[in-house]
Length: 127
Image: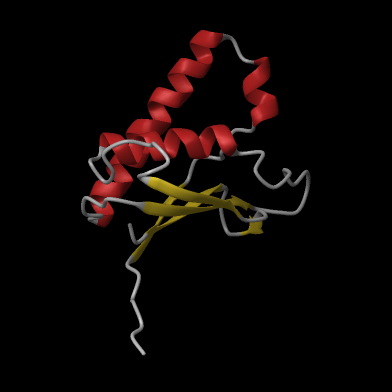
């Protein structure tokens, strides 16, 4: 019996992830700037962590909150996660964010932590 070890990396952004509801209320110029800033942060976080180029990945997203007040719904942070994945493309971790390269996105319930933010666990997936 052969067991395959999956390589995984965990990176965290200390910016509170925005939600789909918040994004709907924003002016398109604000949204563009927030997405651009997030992509850049996530690209740098991936480079700092030393994530190598990968053909296919699974992404697990966990929002981090300081307390349990006004916890977002699971997957409410989808727009922030999409920007983070685009940052992985910008960093050269994956070639594109097509279904071939991003096999799964799993949204975990928010966790109470010492700071606000978003944690991504990026795992290499077999072809």
